[in-house]
Image 1 (cartoon, rainbow, N blue to C red):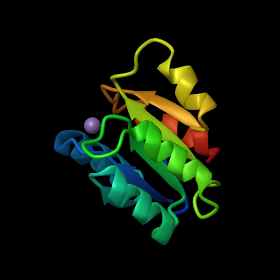
Image 2: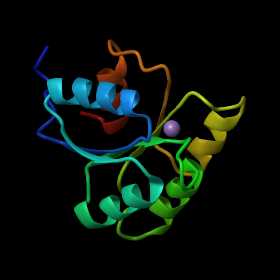
Image 3: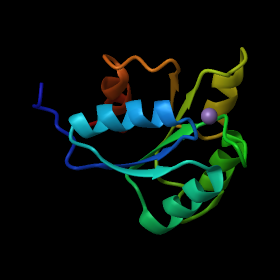
Image 4: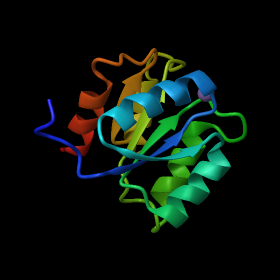
Length: 128
Ligand code: MN
């Protein structure tokens, strides 16, 4: 189980839904990840610039800025453009997965989150 422990990777979670935030944090913490939490797109982008996480989990439905815009900001800034971004969303219409991936997102996880698969989905994108 632990042979591929992430080396204390820091993941920025941008997620406004408390239950999802709790579930994601619980899973990541139990798998040896460190976390930074942001419940709005604005805060998430600021944390990405200042704290330089190893990866970003990005909810697409956010209260202030659409997650797609957060993704654009992240990929446009020299401070954040190399940080892998994994979109986490259940609201995608057909074709949104492709749209997100072509907008520079590095991976895509659909809600509801499957606790059994979640960490492997993340590790696969990060190559760890
Ligand atoms: Mn949301």
